[in-house]
Length: 310
Image 1 (cartoon, rainbow, N blue to C red):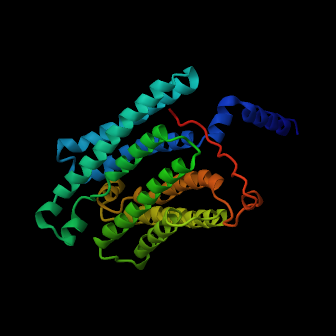
Image 2: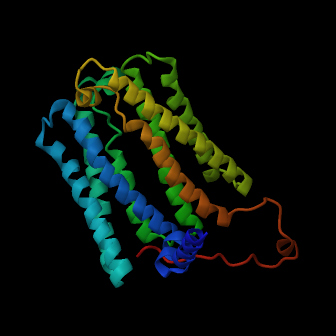
Image 3: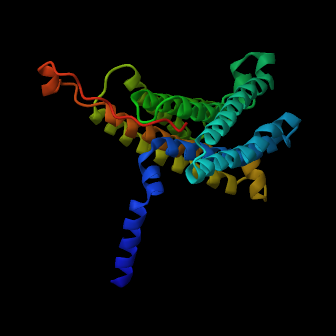
């Protein structure tokens, strides 16, 4: 009983802590942490992907080194702002990492396409070339950092920007799932699941950009996103299972040259980003019917907003 009371006391103290409150109530910090963690994990993904040709070109080391350094720079920026109050330092370091990530991503797309597609110009060459859309992960993360500094947090505009980037990520998942599984001709029928699932997510997340939606629709989108997370976890298990049963006696060789185990985790990863956007967007949507104040000709209440991470 005493241990329980002590634990509850510690929870109350944590809830009253100013820093904890800021992290709980500031979606811009959630996005900042999302980008930092993703850049760190991309180092492992890049290492496995470029190990297939043993880093044949020296330029293939650039995203690897960047993924090692960028999270450290962002972490320094966060500490400088949250611990010492150097807001401008955090802003400028974020801009630096963000624009470099955008540049690396766009350059990577060109280099990946140049591997074969620009010579044959066929769907077959596109399928069996280096995954041309993969470097856009850097571009998306870079845009998140830039948006987080140029647009006020908790505003409708900020929520739509984050949702748009999450939508782009799911569209990328659709392309990856289709092209990667086409390599083996969709040998197992279950390989169609991520294709259909990501297409489903894209169609639902695109609706708020076309028509006015209610909170009920956002809840429906959240339910759809939970299913996307299950698809990603299932894909991770199936990929690891396939690699464990691969032709090589060394698991690492099967992972490098077989089914990429980290690829399906893009689904739950994008689910988190989408939920951040939907959570913020919920403050700006409501029933389509007019409220009593609007019917009487009264102006709508002012929107609550907070400053961006800058």
